[in-house]
Image (tube, rainbow, N blue to C red):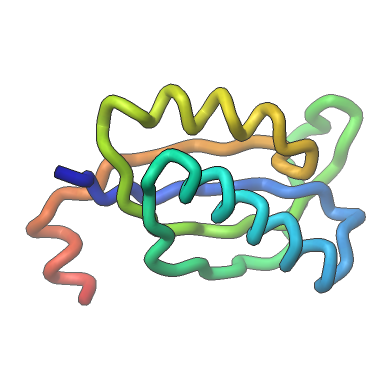
Length: 103
């Protein structure tokens, strides 16, 4: 059974709209290679970091809701390291009750 996850992805702030679309599409492609499904993506825009990270001052934040088998989440994290435009990614498992309330 596929579990619902919420992922916060940070992409470099130097990307324009077209490049950001391509970066989100590459995340979707990596997810589909692991038999996952991207349900939605929400752009939060450019945000500054509280302190510089790896000499970067900010990034493009995108929240992606996706479904993936729980045993494959580590493989997904590993595959994201191969995608050069993902600066950081953090995942949180969503409960069924919470997802039903948000829908």
